[in-house]
Amino acid sequence: MIRFVSASRVVALRITPAGRWKRSRWAGISVDEILEVLDSGGIIEEYPNDGPYPSCLIFGRTQEGRPLHLVCAPVVDEGRLIIITVYQPDPARWEADWRRRKVR
Image 1: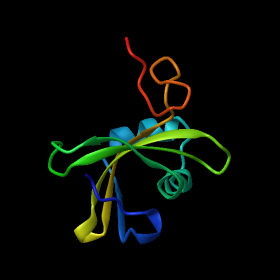
Image 2 (image 1 turned 180 degrees about the horizontal axis):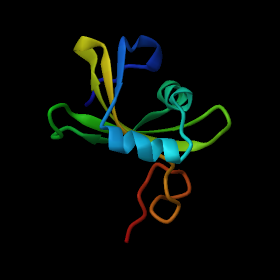
Image 3 (image 1 turned 30 degrees about the vertical axis):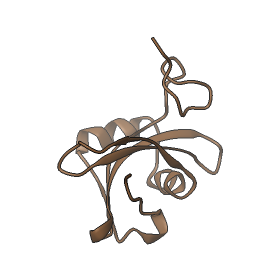
């Protein structure tokens, strides 16, 4: 199981790579919203074999209730959280609770 660092305990937050961040900005997702999701959300999928660090998919809602998915790699021992990508889930691909993928 992936150990997770809440936003209030993160020493360093890294958002990478730049191309994915640009897509997020175009979708109107702010750093404040990312932090809100980190504080309110929970892990819905784990990817323990990802490299160089295991990663996970987090689902949470912003203070305004906007659903967001965030893929990140918590590096707990170093107090770092690497944000890989963040997006608003597509209703065509996710169930209404935003936690389960639709079966195709």
